[in-house]
Each structure stands twice: as structure tokens, then as C-alpha cells.
Amino acid sequence: MSKIGIDLNRFILEEEAKNPNATGSLTQGLLAIENATKIIASHIRMAGLVDILGKAGKTNIQGEEVQKLDEFSNNVLIEQLSASGQFYALASEELDEPIYPEEGKNAKYVIAFDPLDGSSNIDVNVSIGTIFSIHRRIGDGEENFLQEGYKQVAAGYVIYGSSVMFIFSTGNGVNGFTYDPSVGMFLLSHPNMRIPEKGKIYSINEANSKKWVDERLVKYIETLKDEGYTSRYIGSMVADVHRTLIKGGIFGYPADKKNKNGKLRMLYEASPMAFLIEQAGGLATDGKNRILDIKPSDIHQRTPVFLGSRKEIKELLEFLN
Ligand code: AHG
Ligand code: MN
Ligand code: MN
Image 1 (cartoon, helix red, strand yellow):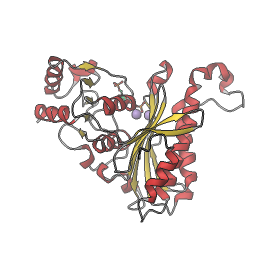
Image 2: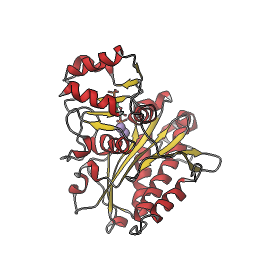
Image 3: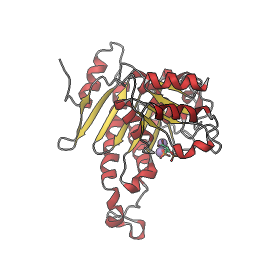
């Protein structure tokens, strides 16, 4: 029976019920993420009005300080995830060091997130997102976050676009939910997402090509042009990966002379997206190694990343190795 249209809460609860060992902790953690992203989504819709609704003296009509959206998103996630009591530690792009919430001192999981991805696109009303990655707690400190990506228990993103979508995986494939504002719920719209074996789009900031460390990448992109590929680059990883997941092709952010290890961060950008893309049947690499096999050594470590359809990533690896 098709589950299309069922809401995210029920979906998560039904998934949990299939696992006889589940304690409900991951379920509650995922529901906290869902709540936080609903709050973020409603604020993003107001982004263009922030100036009008009250920046005078940097306070809004309720007398609160007007926060930048990435600061706001970060705070909402920290509040909701801490209060859920399901996370022993939280790492965020916007925090130098992880937070260890009091409510989570006996919790089983840790979570890393990019509260607002693509923030340069906010002012121009282009899609942005939130990315998250959950691992099991294995110790007391940073080691919790320095685990390989293949050990993720769950990963996902929310895209704030022409509609809001929640895409996630707990290792049993990828499912996508679209927000229905009239009922205030995410409804299953994209069950069991599979990335096409091959696509027609490449997505890379080609303006950097003269600075790319590996010139063989330029040759590879040239062959894609010869084969009739077209180019799309939004500059929000969430939006570029979302399109790649649905339409196939390749997304990449390579190392260049300025960003020697690439620009994107392993824990809360490359690794969760690699997990989703592989769960959907695609591949993700840093140009040599499978992203999910790399053991990070730093919470904010960067990595080159290429992900997408099997055909394109395999071809790319032949060019680069
Ligand atoms: P963030 O807004 O979280 O800092 O991330 C921005 C990232 C990512 O979303 C995108 O893929 C990339 O920056 C775009 O970088 P360029 O502008 O250098 O192409
Ligand atoms: Mn980002
Ligand atoms: Mn960000």
C-alpha cells in the first residue's frame, strides 16, 4: 500500500515500530529537528519583511533584538534539540566548540548541523536549507564527532524553497516530505527516492576553474560539455544537492588555491549529503576516497566533495586517478 501523504510524525513512529530494539530516542530526536525546522521555515518566509517589521534600533515589534537568520536558526536548533533530551552533544557550523546540554547527559546520540546553508542567498530570495547528521555517542568528548560518515544513524536536510521539504534517511533509503502549511505538517511526497543512474546536469562553481588544484577536473568538465550536459549552480549546497538527487548528474566543490581542502565542511555538509546520496543509489567522493570512509580529525574540517549519479562519479574518478 502506498504511504504517500502520510505525515512525517507518523512515518517516523511507524519506522520505529519495525525495529524491536528501538527505545524511541531517535524518534524523539527527529521530531525535535522537525519542530525546529518548522519554526525556522516560518521565519525565513518573513525574511524580506524584517527591515519593515522593525529593525529600528535593532529591535522588532516585540522588543526583541532582530537576529540574523543563521544566528536565529542556530539558536532555535540548540533550544529544541537540547530540550528534547535525546542528544548528548551538539556541534554546529555556528559554534566553535560543541555544546553538552544538561538534559542530554545520559543521551545516546550526538548531532552535527549546518543551521542555515546557503546564507548568501537569503537576501535574494533563493533556496536555502538546514543540514543534520546524527551519530551514536561513543565517549565523553570530541571523539563522538570524529566518527566516519558510514556510521551515521540518520542524516537529512530541510530545503526552504518554493516549497519546504524534509528529506532524510535512517539507513533504509531516502524519503522526502513536503510541508503543507494549511495543516502544518510535512507529508510524504517523495517515497524511496532514487538518484538516476546518469543525469544531464553538472553543478560546480566554474568561475574557480583557473584556481582548481587538479587541472584534470577541467578536462572532465569539458567532456561533459561535449556530451551535451547543461550547467546549474545555485550556491546553496542543499539546493544543488536536492536537484542532483532528483535529476541526477554531478555536484562538486573541489579544492582550489584559496580553499586548499575545498570549502564545504565534512561533519555537517559533505558527510550527511554523501549518506543521503549513497542511500539513494549514488556515489560521493573527495576525488580519491569515499567520503563516508573518511575519519574526520577536526569538527570543522573541510573536504573537497563530488557527489551524484554513479555514471558521472565513476567517470570523474577515472579522470582524477
Ligand atoms: P553556508 O551558507 O552554510 O556558509 O554554506 C555556503 C556553502 C554552500 O552552501 C555552497 O555550496 C557553497 O558555500 C557555495 O560556495 P561558492 O560561493 O564559493 O560557490
Ligand atoms: Mn553550509
Ligand atoms: Mn551555514
